Image (cartoon, rainbow, N blue to C red):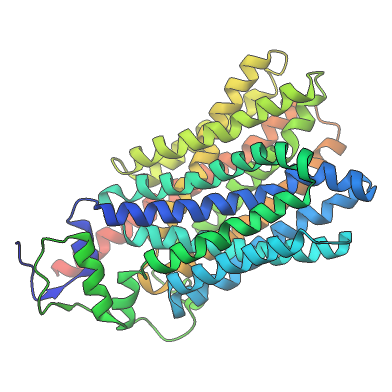
Length: 450
């Protein structure tokens, strides 16, 4: 039975060992959370036509329903993250899952459009709190050399959940009405909650940082490495974090520039993703293809994103992750611009859309993993949450921007060329972040040697 030093650095302990079945279980549990998150986030889009028909709504009247969910996601990401750095990732994650499950279930009994809008906002609050904390908890249990791949594989649950939401809605709406989709979206997280309560641990890094429940840290590390002797072990406490709220820590001199660059990359990335997801079927329909063909081509964007997340995660663990993502976003700009020139050939435009999703949607999953690696434990949940919250502002701008661009009367090649510009900005921003972090690490290394 290998022994360890009497004083253990938890981060090094995890980094120096192979991924254990216990850590895989944590990744799977967070995958399920994010999958249900994706199901609930996408549900309203799948059931919107049935809601419109039942309540005899004009298309424009549905816009606030979509916007309320996105706005709730943004507010949830910005406000709930700091609580996770104060009260723990597990605690806030379980409360978020309970809240969005309950609100989704209640929204199934909405009797008016206004009531549905309010409940979709409240559902979004819970969804906005769950996703960043799932990312943070997964990242804190993954060894550094496998972190990008594991976090990005976990986050693929979102696209899987979104896709399953479409498949489930097709049968449920026809058989039981649109309310049934919201019932499923509420029941699933509530059924998962007891499993999470029993199996999902608190972050060992968080517990050591706060000096709480260190006996629980020992039990958790024994599950990660059952054959390691931890008898009498103590834990190395990191330097005490500065006073103030976790949000203020994002603007410390050593984090400020990285935080701003991260926010700009998230904003541009989510702007593109939501603009294409919202408007691509409409834009393709103007070329004369059938609605079914337009939907299938748009689906290739999500398929590409899922495969891109896994492939880019593998590359990020083997090369500088900033530059991997920078190249991906620059390539995304080229593929997005090419969409407008290939609309006459469905299989060709489907291929280009797949490649665009591979780079930009897969790149966004990579940016989530990057943000979790960038921030220290004392403000990691806040950093990931706020990056996602700023990104959600971009998603709102993207959803609205597509309509504004259509109103300008641009040709499709010109329109898609403009949509590619934010991808170039995201790529350059991530390259700048990579240069900044390399310079910071060099200076820190010189200071230690001195």
